[in-house]
Image (cartoon, rainbow, N blue to C red; front, side, top):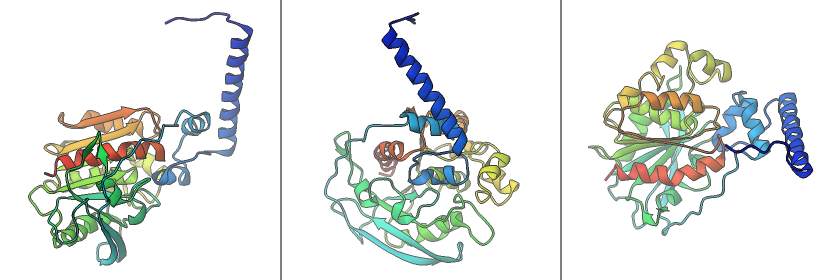
Length: 317
């Protein structure tokens, strides 16, 4: 390491300005609470006070900025949207089914179930693109393995069971059979799970709870808490009880993912990153972990959508 002791007046002034700016940002973040431009699935962090001052500071100071990825697409396939009554959720839920290029309704295809983040729904499950666009991506110049993708309204209960509202059962016992009747995700091993933030947690939780259901999981910035007290203090609606947290603790039950291809992507400045690191240390060895610069923001989510979609589709051949 080379250190410049003293330096020029210009350098000293620049460093002084940098320190002053940093102090100002710290004061500003501390005075107003968490002020941060968050991504679509990052709303929960501000809404429930999860975001620590560090991410607010990083946002204001540019540490979370990522260059927009260069995306390329084949011709976009068709989509269909509608709703069905979910007995598990006790309400009508919206859905969108998208098809890859050169395919459409009636074709038999593997299926990616894409779970949305907090405050989102089936129409906004992905960042910066529609499900049909995601399936038409070219990643590293190559087209994806043809798969269908479905999104659905899961509410804000972290995709786990609550009294009177069970989005997990809705996905497994209503949504997936609904798609299978259309020829999508027919077994064996033709289903993958993907999600962002709350949806990333949900994808992992469902795969752990229902062994043998899926072949691959991709979790982008999964919202993983390490204790019920931490989760309940930030979001009282995430888990119905401490016992529900224990059942849905994806770190404790990580061994249930053995035999499933798993990709986990997390920015090192994401406030959920410590929980993600604990998850990764507990995962079986045959998994892919991506830790890179980034926070819990749209720019990181968008950067990770193409490789995550490619990863899941590759294991659904």
